[in-house]
Length: 418
Image 1: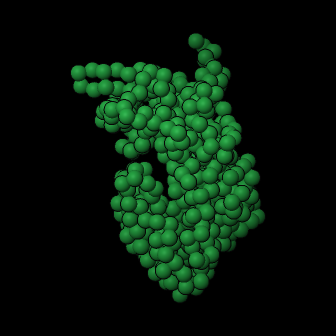
Image 2: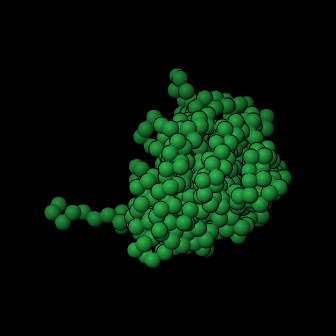
Image 3: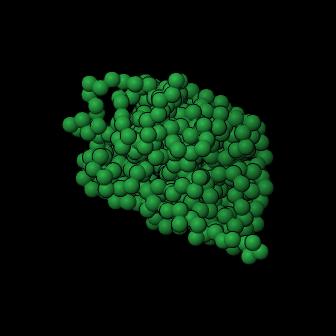
């Protein structure tokens, strides 16, 4: 059963009527289905016939409850900042549960990661490798690392979320693999634990994965032949999700079969780092229609959510299905632009979208917002940061309170000379 569906023509998230949920909570707000997240995790994990470790890429949704839910399922956590390390630990993660990825790690962040005994740091540059060694030496420890390799593979995804091409800022060019591992092997406070790759996000074909993973297999074979011990391969994440019913995304089983065909007999631990894949379709952004405006060119549905709450449509040109809470069967489809109140033409959620007619005061739901929704929100136009709600069966809890403008202003002061 789909955790988000119409029942008796009323949209529900699990067993909760969203109209009733919106009656009790100020719009706009995010809500997530726990069942959806669990189903995604279980479906991905069970697709493999080999031992594999999932590390949730928490940048997709870093709410403490989401992290805790996945930790309880046995997931590790992939982090990309010192703040994410702190969040993961606050949610109950131990250092051994955490892989620290990402470019541009500061000395302060690296010190915190090493002190927190993170399982592994994925290294992005030679200078970062040297800094990790120096900090580890000062702390009297030896730190596990993996080198992130850039295989120069085009993931055929959005230009802003491709990460595995030579022109991207991420990783070590694969031609320099031997030299960087030799440098790592000579550093006394570094322990080479593995090797890492991540070529991008929302990838909808297995071909880029196959090319990148085959390159990694050959690199591992070569590194082992010259004496390096490579215990694990971190394959990153990137498998896409369906934002529409028309998208043809590889299944979990197809993805797992590809990984197994390349690494199944390599005597190596395999890590994967899904983020969007686990949480995207669990989430709804619930918003109220504040006005319906018709011009000679357009009819606009104006809602109380805005681009500061959910920026993906204007940042990435992404498509998100938008549903009225009441399934108005028999009403005519009309073409709308669905927009927010911010003073930017880019403040929109959909353009030229057919949808059943709505009126002022109607509640609508923007789908598939569980990933890169709340985490990318801001207080632009001095708008409150909206609440997040987690739903389980017929109950829910607010897992982040709405942050009002007065609370934001408390963090500021007028300079004494003004």
